[in-house]
Image (cartoon, rainbow, N blue to C red; front, side, top):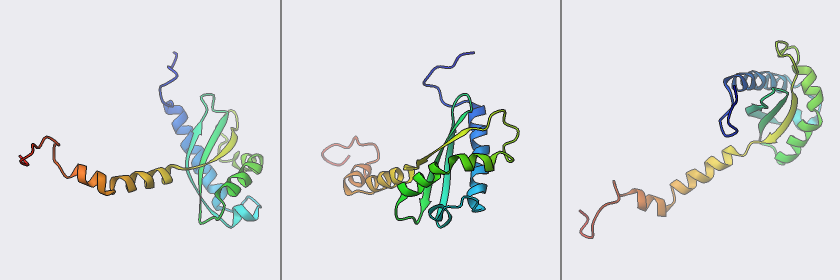
Length: 139
């Protein structure tokens, strides 16, 4: 059964990604990574995307309250092998333990930009009309 390249992730990829996200959140919450930058930062794991063969897990993280988000992501990438080892008991049902890659989650910034656009005067003016078909007399 072949998949088209533009179709979304399979149910299996989504399910495993959510299991990995939960296990990763637990490892980070327990403070098992001995790095001052990681230990002193609250890190939100918003999503984990699995490769089709389930061997690569890309974790999208948002360091909350950190001065340098990129430094926190770099620290997580430096400790990716250690994190992989700490997660193996929680993911023992997997045939292969995935390789971890950490990326900065920018979705919150995108949401903020969209929110600002929707509340801008130009858009509010355009949204003031119900169907946009009013004539010159306002009918």
